[in-house]
Length: 169
Image (cartoon, rainbow, N blue to C red; front, side, top):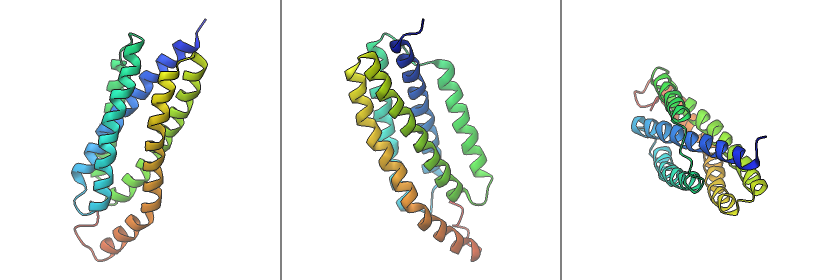
């Protein structure tokens, strides 16, 4: 029989791998965004939040004497790396990166919402509080990306139409 605690620990491992994937993606995006300073600054801010989230989720795992899944971590990092490599090859990287970031943030929102319920079911109020602390950061980032996507697209389209080198990144 699988207990609520077993599910919680498994999903915490997933969340840790997800945050490692986010770290890889955010670092890659930030490193390439040369001509969209507002977007880059927000990505850098969220990168710092992501590093803090990793620590918080890692501490939840440690309380259960559990470690992050090496396989999930490697898989998440490889996925993020491949996404980053794919972004380098497209002419509209900044737009596709913004869209992908928004989708990823919503996956994180769903994951932390599920973790809050799982922690409650497992009677782990400390993990529930951690996830409730992380969730608003993910919601804020998703909201910011969605609100700023039209401006990013408008800047990109104008620069691209003028055949400017600064359109892509």
